[in-house]
Length: 572
Image (cartoon, rainbow, N blue to C red):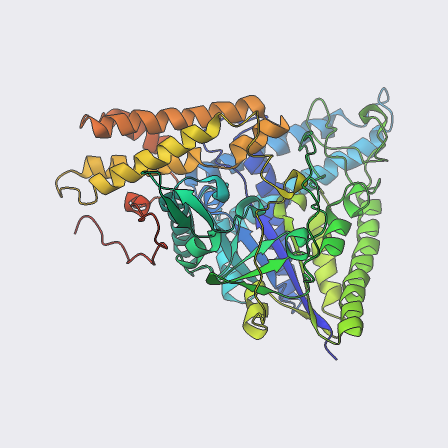
């Protein structure tokens, strides 16, 4: 007898790193995630399929990340990165065993382990996937193993954008990019930072009021049918603070919101939103906590690999967590065999937890429930080295449990369309459940710059709605202007500033895209485009190759943004 449905959502996102530094922030972060997360995940999906199991994962890949995975320059850079890792660990193989170094035999074993591991990752990338991870994800979607969802183009903080045209452009460029790269329009989307705002009355340019519709209206106008949110947004009660405790997220001052009254609603079902035919799913707090919490969840177990301590010569992670209170200098050496044993125990426990949560809901209500969990994909493999193996073992074991239907998000909604509507409050996953992480005394200087650029882009899109057919340089310049604005709007920059994770890097990146936007906008306005300068920007900031700047055309204040007709090419 069925007791409910299980949806496993993975949200994959990294900022635009192409030709913007290498280490400690830049391309190497992308390469680490490709090696430790994306390729192992693809391998796990394929291995499950070979055993007759469709993983049914819902995998969000933000458009800006997808463009980087699809970029030949970065693909070649990744091979160079893997070669450098293999060369570095080869030197460790020659260094050990060494009588002057404690436990050098075990270090030799670990060096061989990593040599084999990086060699296998390189073989997968070059030979199995032909350096094309996008094609691999696309293949697994086509054969029914996964569902791919989209997002705003550059992971903007949607509620704080000033114009409906920018909001529309972020989702339009995002949706179009996902369809172009994966061969199929995405029905679902990850709302960046889980940041939502309802509709509200705003002031127009003449001081009058007009109604700004809620976020989901722009999503619906770009054929997005559902998204995800936090549990407290659905259920009410106390907003949860910053719970992304895996990884170097830095310290965030806690500023809580007052408790909301309980809504009487639950994350065990999906809901319609009242102003657009868009559904929302809330993640199950208990099931999510068990995985992402370093203090109380699986990843903090002392037998798992320590992320922060690396060999001073090769950069290899030769140590284990040992305990959360153990200083880095006192960490014990890693044992991958011991770690895999613990993965077996943790995956058994998680299967039982999922079953018990759904069964308890069924016993209490008499209804089949939805249990949806959502995590950053990079948690698995990159931050929690053993995490991809955990996913693989968990899914394999869950298929043997009677009564639980493993589904992608769209499959669930097709079989279980919502029967109730919900009004969501202003919210995010961030500290206190509100916008403070992205809009505070450290980042408030950024938003007037973003808003000014939005309005300038909107004005130029309207002015040059019809470009003369012989002025292709102007056309290219306007499209590059749109790219630079999208990159300015990335939510990563204020996030990294607030957390101090990469403060200087984030300020530099924001200022550079601002400078690019303003320089190019001035050239367009003065009818004096420097083509050499334009080429230099196109050679670095190159995502969204088929972008159309007219996505930023103004949307009349006071009117719902209507479904835009398909834009006709400017040139025949």
